Structure formats: C-alpha cells, structure tokens
Length: 593
Image (cartoon, rainbow, N blue to C red; front, side):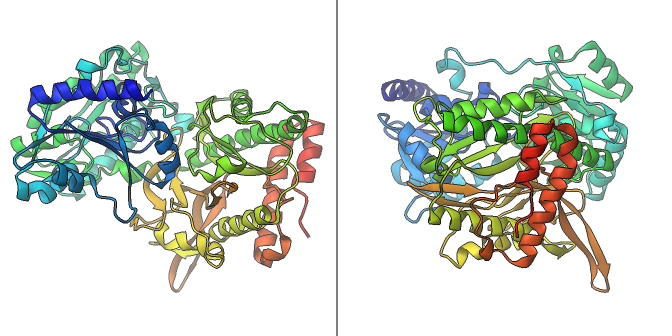
C-alpha cells in the first residue's frame, strides 16, 4: 500500500506544479463541513490510506504529513507505514501546527493551494497570520482529485424522502417561521444554510447520501420572502417535488448557489463554517454579511414532545436488540469462533430486525481486550480477533430508527476479570453516574459538568483525552452540536429537550479499555428562589453488567440509582421479550445489595 500512496502523492505533485503551488492541504470534510463526508469527498483517505474520521494531510513538492488527534495516533502510525507521509500528533508538545510547519518548509513567496469548496475561512486567516511574514499566500485551485483519482465516486444521487409528521412533530412552515424570526433578531434579512443536518431538519426531509447519516447534498437559502433548495433535481421524487411546492420551496441546481449568493437579499447570515469559496463570494459581492451560526444549529437540538416520544420508542427497540445480543454473546463466546467482526455483525442484524430501523448510526467500535485501549479502534480483517471467555469486550454501537438515533456503549465481562479491570470498570461507572445524577441551573454548559465524569478517575491518576458527551440527532447525525460535554470550553448552554451522551472512559494501553455510555435527555428538575434547575433522564435502556462492579466503591446514591435504572429497564423492555429473554433480563437487572 505504501508504494500506491507514494504514487498518488507524486501524481498530486504534478498537478500542483502546473497550478503553481508548492503545497496542498487536504482536509477530511466536504463542502458542508460534514463529519462524515460522502465517498466523493474522501480525498484525504484516498491520498493517505488513513481511514480515521479526523485528520488533515498536507503535501509539499518534497514532503507530506498527516495531522490527527490522540484517538488515532496508534492506528495512523500503522496505516502510514511504507508511505512518505509523516505523522504529526496534534496537541502534543513539540508538534507544529500545519501553518507553522508550512512556514518552515516553504520558501518566501510560495503559494499554498486549497480547494475552496472543502476548506474554510479560518484556514485562510491562520495561514495569513503565521505565514504572512514570508509572503506565503493561500491560492484557490480547482479540485486536483478530479484529475488524478481515476475511479472517484460521483456526488451521490440517492432519492430524498419525506420525514412524516408523526416523527418530526413540527411542520416545515412552523420551522421556517421561527428561523425567519431568529434571522431578523440577528439583524439579517436572509440566511444560507450549508449544514446538511440543518437542511434535512428544516424541510422534514431525509436522504441517503452520507454513510450512517440520513441527509442529502444541498444548500438552503431562506429570506423573508422566499426559500430556495439547491440540489440535483434527479434526487427528487414526484412526491417530494409536490411537497416542496406546497411549502413554497423553489428548487435550483446545486451548483447555482455560487452565483446566487452574490445576489442575496439584504444582510446575509452565513455560518462561520461555510466553505471558503462561498464565503469569499459573499464577502466580495454583498454589502453586508454576518458570520453567525444559523438558528437551526440549536433549534434542531431542542427536541419537541413528538421527537422525545420517538426517542423513547427508539430506545426501547434498541434495548430489545441489545438484550438479545447480550444473551447471544454469553452463549456463543464459550463455544468459540466469535470475533470482533462477527459480534458487530450480530448486533447490527438484531437492530435491523426491529421496526423502523434503517441502519447503523455509526461504524461500531467492537474491541476486545487490549484493542479497547484505543478510543476509536475500528476492527479490520487484519486486526479482527476471537473473543475469549475472559476479560472485557467493549462495544460502542447504535442504530438509525425513523423515530430517533441511538448511541450506547457497554463493556461486557466475558469471563474472569482482573482486579485492575474491576477497579477501572467501577471507576468509569462512577464517572458515568455522577454525570447522570447531576442537577444544575439553567445556563450551565457541558464543560461545567464534564469534570464530574472525571473526579473519581483523577483521584487515581487516570484521565481520558476525548469529550464526555455529544448531542444526538432525531433520525439525523449521532454527533449533534453545538452543545457538548468536554474539557475544552463549549459555551452552548444545556436546555430542556436536548439529548446528550454520557460516556466517560478509561484506557490502559496493552491491557484493556472500559466505557459506559447512555444517551440522556435534559429535563426540568425544579424551580427555587435561585432560578430553574435541570437534570438528566436516561433514554438508553440496557443493563449495565454487574459482575465487575466493586460495590464498596459506589456511594449509596450511585447504588440506588443503578438499582432504580435497572428496574426501569426491566419494566420497559420485558413486554417485548419472550420468557427466556425475560428471565435473563430479570437476573441482569436484579438489585445490587
């Protein structure tokens, strides 16, 4: 593979020379800043062989580097073997940023090439600030991969579907009314929405253009007088065309947005993440532009009553699938032959048997033993291993249901566990429960709660480098923002109706990994003289394995919550199970003393 990657790098360098650039930056994303780009935009994966969900490749005429974070240090080093691409470990002391590295390796007056459709204005500003003193400038060039990626997948042409009101809960017209009011409050007259999840949510439509995320490639322009959807028309069924006309939504070709943005009405509101090509077009041709995240960014995160009801239903179906999987796993592992990949395939099969399940919510992490010490380990045919009747197996998985997206992690004891494994299992559970049981005033953001998940670990000198929680979409992306729970500052306040995961973790390289994850709903707690307070309701319904828990390490409150949670799990799931499954669940959810 290394030789193939080096050949691709050299092909790119030939295009770079013709375009007069000495470096080229290749991000992970697409023109919509999507977390999961469609295959057409997986140029970073194609040029480097690195298949992680986060990373940027920078290629010069003589060198190449991949920048990624701690989730992928081990995996990236393995995938880059044999190629000329050097691994740069982000946020590790001594690692230069991409602009710093380019400043050092390029000559004064050189140009750095980018495809403006998949990079943003912050990159240009950073390059200008760091490299400006050497007169190194950014230059927009045509996408070079159209020339060198011979079998490049086309931009998806999948059909768009209407998301029924029984799941959406609010009409498109209601949403447009609130969006227009919010845009006006921001001192703007129109808004261009580029986030695919926001477009799907606004129009109550779903698609199949992106792996695991039911969205469709498009832009949406909303003014006080009109709405325009920029999309390849072949994606629209007759039913969807009628639906859009009924909602007074004009349809124009996807590519027309570049010209139309020059003629936006009044003051245009654009996202700070809008790609560089469209941002520069707006800034060059319009008198007034405000770079403010569209109101849909938060609106879609606050679920209405119908969506919340749907989430609860989706979690029941997902819980049934997880119970069936747990029973299967307990029987199958001692018999031999179960591997990480076959276990993942089994849980996917059981989800797809549930009503309204449309697929997986993300690529599962099925990690046995030492593999679970990689926070975002993904099994390959080469790394796949058998699950033995001992130690811990971590499974982070989820489904896409018409009524909600699910995300759950359970750490399964497959047999005897070590004292270290039991201590770490219990410490991680304590972190999970401290978040679950938090009560906090309105206006609190996820960063202010994040430390609760870590306190018990910190006392043992343990920490993890990723966030503790992220938003979850309603049959949309499993990673929904802007609200998050993590150590670095995330100012968006948590609001009643938001969904959020709770997933602290412990990783011991070469030994094991532990993670407990439920999806939570933010709900009102109380109102006092000091204001309104919020708390979390667990949405996920699945037993937490009791065998590795060191009971004496739990507080009375933690123990009481776990027993109450398990009772709820049994009460909610047992009506959907047969007698054998009920018996298993009764035992799995029996009280800890």
